[in-house]
Image (cartoon, rainbow, N blue to C red):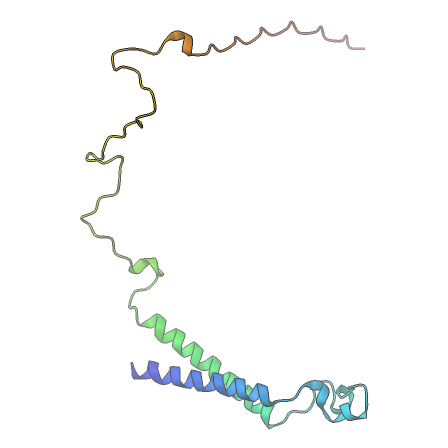
Length: 149
């Protein structure tokens, strides 16, 4: 537990150091050659520019940040004790609950609202109320095939 807290402190300090060091650095166009016009400083120091204390310190702080991130990921994954399963592997379902198979027996019966007319229980629907389906037309006789040449 103490290692976890120590690594978090190291990660936060390195993140703040990266933020501060990046904000203190000046842009590529503000190098020595920018004073001579057109901001063509890339030709004065080469393609990569000059490497000073701030850029080297930023690289060291970034390496510390990435190392602490990997250490936190390792500690976080090794603490569970179970391999595989993922997030859902840790979920437990109580055995007293059975999965739902249909409508429960104690469900209240649904009744129609008062303004909807209903048929009496012993009568059937009148035959005239059911629309008749039209019969499908008989298929036409097939056309004679053209003679082959």
